[in-house]
Length: 192
Image (cartoon, helix red, strand yellow):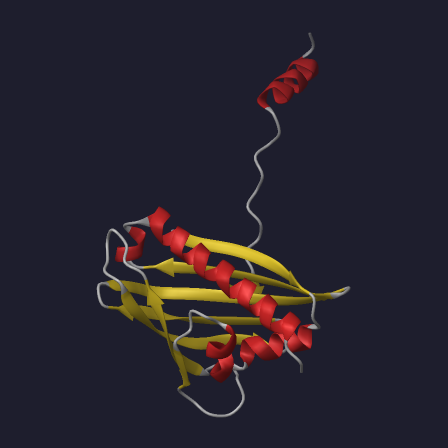
């Protein structure tokens, strides 16, 4: 058997090459924290124009109307949403083996924003017995035939969440999947 045939046979026995991780989502060249141990990424197709989906996502004061987990939200600045805009919002968190039930107070600052295309914000989330030192959240909106593809990726850093990586990732994933589902429902079932 030739060397070339031996290499080919070995490759077949080994199976397909491992898939490489997709490029992280970005907004104006900035991504999530690629060194973070806790990350989650997902996407959903929304049967609504990108302008409608964007309006829902960026109309912060109305998040509690369509997003069940958002208890309160307040803008910390005025005017149109832009880089530097900040907002504080709260969401209940059920008890876990490592922390009691609490309400997370999340203070987010927008760093990148491109109308109808992307958003990126960062900030801490602090509750009684629970702390995420820094979350980095990127949203991408792509107009496609028949609607919009919404992609989101978030990372968390901090000693507490990094001590329980699987549980933290599970909670992050559940939160993002619920957010995407709520966004889809609101965009597809509301006028405007």
